[in-house]
Length: 465
Length: 107
Image (tube, rainbow over all chains, first blue to last red; front, side):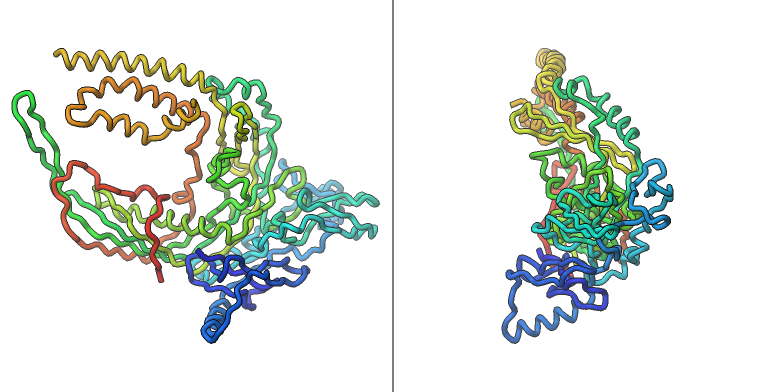
């Protein structure tokens, strides 16, 4: 499938984006690698990667002109705070000692106790406009392609002028070693660590531990003994996990075959002891087609490869997937102070890395929505062809909050990390507890033996009588 | 071997296979003798799944907020399929939303 268009650096709604062909299933771009999305406001201008395809010949020129015309609809929404890197001050007293308080559910200044929250991201950046009016592809600036080489940033302290180097792979804040003020990354450096919006924690750590305790208490009998010995719920961590949130204005078509029962009858065969009845069904066969528009609001998809829900080889990532949904519509504009005292995972997947998956999810949603329209086919419907035309999409990078307990099970040789996760907004809890296979085997054998004995008695009684 | 056994017994296909293996001609009489292995697999798989939750996921196709409009339904009879022994049609996938089928271009 195609890849999303990446507009030129800092493009705004009135500026055309890079070469692409909108209107395809998901934002397209010719070639395997689109232009690199450079930092937005205040960052250096973007240069296209060498791999970008060169268009040659009259046809190519015409095609490029046509693409450029249509690309006028593609746009990048600037979600940066407009602040320079460095001091991130309390709006009331100017202190940089700010952190998120779970008791007040807001940012709190440690000096003047002023509490506030950043503005709702949808309202602040106009990301809540009607999905039906989406045309082309709208990308919030925090979804820019990740640059792996951006590992350190030098911050200049506006308090004393000192220069502080910060490893942005690990941290987004550091103290000035001269004047002790907190310095923050406030601009959207394109290393995947700065989202467009953050969904702050609502659930306290204590509430999360209670839920994890309750979850494991129900699963102790057959839990692996080592897990029971090493279980320390206090090790739960607050983690911000990166998601890409997608809105879609779509048109979808499903085609297949459906059957309706027209007659049900029984036929008696044989005679005497061999007499038996068989039920038969007659059915009418229909060609079935459903075409409809879909407006998808806030479809979420993991944007950190290590949390890929389809890959449970190293860790039970499906657990993190299962504690959804999140109320992403309540996400607030990014402020690095929301992340203080929590850990956060860097986004390492770009829009074009997940767009195939997103298109499949669009189709899955379409299939689910078509279900109530095929009730008359009592024998079922076999969908054989499906397609989706994407009229418009909107992509936003959001950090969502998870209280996470991890347990690395190395008993089986290959280490598998078991997660018990609590949705930091709703409290939905799901987890994976390592099991003791010998214990389950013993219980299953016991139950199977009882069933076998009962079955044998019933079976032999059929032979005998 | 035990994890493999757990995965196998947690797989609904295994249960189908076990149930189906006794449904041949005259095979119905052997069904009671399969109760032991079937219960073993169900207990093993049930406990394993309750602890490991390997089947849990976010049902985005149902839980995502979606508006549907301009439904265009085109159904036409193309034939008959008579004297079928199954109550359900073969290959039905109307409830298997994650199974993808042949992709078509849509304008």
